[in-house]
Length: 249
Image (tube, rainbow, N blue to C red; front, side):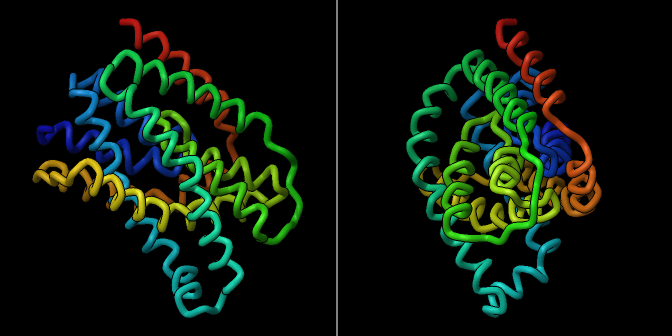
């Protein structure tokens, strides 16, 4: 990855992480179609770029995280632990399955396009919300749903907020819980991916992670608020169809 590619991919990750349109899917497509990068290489980069945005989320939600660490919100801590553990039930087998697509750029691009359309349908069918509290049941369902976001093209924030909205949470609470859950989930996933695939942090990748952090930190507040007000299902449909078309080119 050269300097220009590092800047573009870092910017893309920093912005799209907070929107329910799959940051990983868009980073992979940009790497393959714009820069001609190898599929396995850009797949690895797309995973490690989440380090930048998870650090941004860590700082943004620092007050909530402090309360959890100090055991001031035991219910939320229990909720997040159950959700993280149940994520592994779907994430591990699905990841091992989709790795087969990562060796072929056409199949991977096609998969991302199809999964974006699925993400669009999930967001399109959101239920009207009511006030509910976190419990073991919706934490378990949330984790199972999040596990499918290892598929490039499935938006992690999109699928998790959709699950929470179906469970009756308000949009504001759903987005907050979704991004709080992303912090331990992404950190654990990064460690697991690094152990399985090996860690090769070249200078331009570190720069790209730094750019993702800076852009993500300064955009998180505004883009999360924007996401609450806009139904991104149509964006997912359009982008998904476009990716399906270019997968054959």
